Amino acid sequence: MRLFTCKNCGQLVYFENAACLRCGSQLGFDAETQDLLTLSPDQSGTLAPLGGGRSYRICGNATQVDCNWLVPADSPGGFCLACSLNRTIPDLSDPVNQERWAAMESAKRRFTYAILRFGLPVTNEGLVFDFLASQPGAHVMTGHDEGLITIDIAEADPAERERRRHDLGEVYRTLLGHFRHEVGHFYWDALVRDGGREEACRQVFGDDRLDYEMALKNHYANGAPADWQMSFVSPYATMHPWEDFAETWAHYMHIVDALDTAAAFRMRVKPEASSDPSLAARVTGDPYTADSMEELIGEWLPLCYAVNSLNRSMGQPDLYPFVLSDSIIAKLGFIHGLI
Image (cartoon, rainbow, N blue to C red; front, side, top):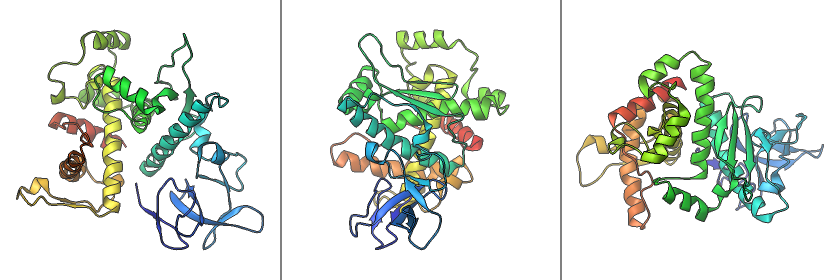
């Protein structure tokens, strides 16, 4: 994630901020320019950025879920690009649903930002979301079906999400990770299946024509192979080539977004105790336009050593608790080339 500043006072502000905490100026994110704008009311009652430019309205979900994204004043719709991807939202008469949906939307805005940075197609004509709450006897299954992504909003409850992570034997489970994984299925359809790249993908991830239901039953009955870390980024990735692709896609997005943040802070890693050049990196470039996966990995691995060590100093689990073998890096390289 890039760093943003208030254009009125120069204060660093977060992507999620709707107002500058120093000067109080109103802020709003413009999906077209991918910038956090500093705004003031104009004569027509809409909002204009400092320095001039097109006029905007606030998103229709600004009060519901603290959405700080903007809608062009001449747009017929009332919702920003990220919120317009919603097909179904939960019953908001339940305040628990309201709180959980707000957390979902916060993660979705960050996820949508990355998709925009990649220059990938994102439109409610192909990609839509159902945010649903499980009811007694009617459990919501998180998943993807031809562009429709369904997410159980119970995932927004940290205690419930941790319980599921523990029960499923996962090392990592976040709201943002759900978005990144499920959209991997959507872009497999759009870029691999519809892009005529199925055979190339099978050479890397395996034959996706394997029976999915049988693979699912086998995975939950027998678990992942003992040596799964040699070829797969997670145990779940071993279940079926589609899940391997989606998990790898999610990790590619994790890596690029984290490197983007590190570059914004101009982070440099050079361990005092080692002269190994592979453990040193100066993260300054734009990972969204990197020439190769090797370039990204050359920055990512040293950064992981550093941030994992920082987390351990705070008594926290590793920030990135995964092993990237040569086989996994090759899969990440396929995703990089595909995008």
